[in-house]
Structures are given as structure tokens and as C-alpha cells.
Length: 103
Image (cartoon, rainbow, N blue to C red; front, side, top):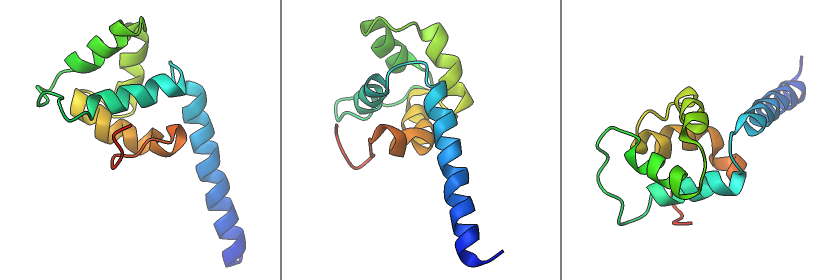
């Protein structure tokens, strides 16, 4: 297998991985982007190692936390700061949201 083939296979694997994640997201892409922005806002309280802010956001948008919280956990989001960093690692490119942006 040559370099080009390896490169194409890696790109296809990454695309398949992103497609699977995208299909599994239990809320709209825009809502997930809004959640990440909400948690990363300047006025956000320091993480208390719970999902308090995440759950408050979900409830304010009438999104059932019982559906979303397990998915966040599957992607390493066991508290508010882990949602920002770990879930972001999996979905940042998919949702078009980046840590260096405030929106």
C-alpha cells in the first residue's frame, strides 16, 4: 500500500467516525454548539465537577437531560468542564465550534 492509499484510508476512517458521531448526537447540531458556547462563556462559574450548568441549559431549551447526559458521558463529558474539553474533541469540527471562539 502506498502513501496516497494510506492517506485516503485514514481520511475515510475519520469521515466514517465523524458520520457515526453526527448520527448519534441526541440534539440538534446548533443546540450542541449553543451548549458548548454556553459552558465556555466568560461569566460561567468554575466547574464544580457536576453537570449542573449543562442540565440547566438543556432544561432551558426543553431538551430532556435523561437523553443527552448519557451521550455526553460516552464522549467523556461527566462534568461541565469535561463537556467543553472532551466532548469538544469529538464534535468540535462536526458542529463548527472551536474553543478559541466565543460563539
